[in-house]
Image (cartoon, rainbow, N blue to C red; front, side, top):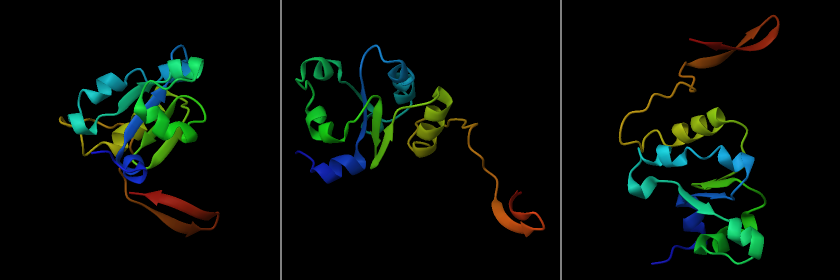
Length: 131
C-alpha cells in the first residue's frame, strides 16, 4: 500500500546524497548508526548522482521529494528537513537525540545537556541558571 505524501513526509527517514560531495561524506557513518536501529526505524540513504547527471530518477522517493530537494546532502526526518551539514558531531547529536528511544542497545549521548535550567533576573539582566 502506498503512503500519502503527508504520511510519507511525517514518518519518513530519508537521506539524499550524491557521490564525491564533501558535505555528503560527513554522513558516511549512517550505516554504522543504522546498525543499532530496528529495521523499520532506519534512515534510508538514497544516492541521487544519476538523477543529477542525467535527470532520470532511479528511486521512486526521488520523484516524491524532488520539489523539496534544493541541495545535497538533505535529510528528511519525520517531518523535518535538514539541509547541509557542518560537522559529524552536529549530525550525531541531532540523530542520537531524536532516535534515543529507537536504539536496540543503550547509547551514551555526550552531546546532550541534561541539567534542569531556569531563567533568573539579576542586576546584569536575565541569566540562565542550571542545577
